Length: 416
Image 1 (tube, rainbow, N blue to C red):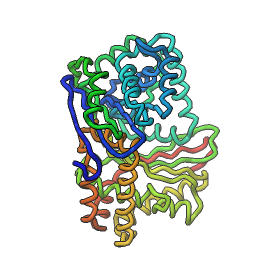
Image 2: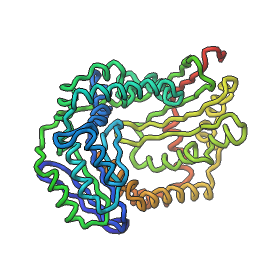
Image 3: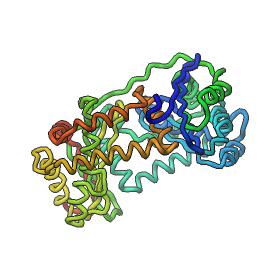
Image 4: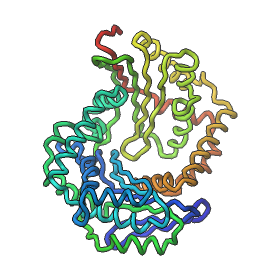
C-alpha cells in the first residue's frame, strides 16, 4: 500500500509487532507502546502504569539514571513518554542516522529497568506533587470531578496519574511484578517512521528485541459504563472563575457514525470558530476558554464541553449551552453545503498534516495498532466524507447529545 506511504507490518516469533513506515524524511520517529493503561488497572493499582512510565527513565541493568538520560539527550532529538487509558508509550524523534541508537536505548529501558528503591521513592514524591498540583488547577480539577460524578464502576472515574492513597503504598515489588507481567513483547507494538528500508528497520528491531521472551498475558478486562445523567455543584475555596462541564458517552454509536461525529464536534466546539466559541466568547464575551474534547478510543468514547466564566454568568452560560445543543438537534442551526464542505476540507487538511509529519504519523499508527484498528482507516474516512450530508450531522447529534453529566465548580462565596 503506497498511495499515502509505504508500510510493512511484521510480527516476530515472540509476538512483538513491528510497523515500518518508509517515507522521504530526514527525521525519524520511533514509538514503542504497550497495551496497558489506567483502564486496565485494578482498584489497588490506580496509577501503577503511570508510575512505571516514570521509572523506566530511572536506570537499567546497563545504565544508571544519569547515564540513561545523558544518552537520550545526546541523540539530539526529542524523547518523551505518556500513559493514557489504554496504553503506555515511549517515543524518540531524531535524525534518521540516530535510528539504531534510539532503538537500542528504548530496548534497554523497556526490557531492563531496575526500579531502584531510592529512585522509586524520589519519583513517588514527584508523582504526588503532580496529583496535588492538578487539584490547584481548576481545569484539571473540573475534569477530575466530573469523571468521579459520571461513573460508579468504570476506571474512567480515576485519573491516569493515580490516587494519593495507592501511589503512597506502591512498593518496589508491586511495580516489578506488574511490569514483568504486562510489559512483554506479545503486548507491545513498535512503529518506526524513517527513510530507511523496511528490511533494515526489521533487522535493527530484531537485533535488540528478538531474544525478549513472550509470556502468557493475564486477561485484564475493563468495565464499560454510560455516564450518569446528573448535575452537581462543587464549592472550592480561592478560585476567581467558575467552570462548567458537560460529559457525554456514546458506546452505542455505530463505528461508521464516528466520522460524522468528528465533523460535528469540530463545528460544535473544537474549532476557534465553533458554535460554542461564537456564542459564548464572540457574541457575549462570557468566556475566554470554551472547547470540546472528544476521545474515540475503544473503551473510552467520551465527549466533554468545558468553559470558565464569571460567577454571575453561570446560569446564563448553562442556558446558552443547552440552547445550542437543542438548536442543533431540532435543526434550527443550519448546516448548509458550504459549511459542510468546509468541515470536510478541515478534516482532510488534518489527515494530510499527520501524514506529512513523521512524529504525528508515528503516533497515529501506534494508536491504531494498539486498538487493533486499520492503520489506513483515514483513507476510508476520506472516501466516506463525500457521502456525509446535513441529515447525518443532525442524526448523530440526536444520538450523542442526550442525558449529560453536568458539573459546575464555584467559589465558596457564590450564590447560584
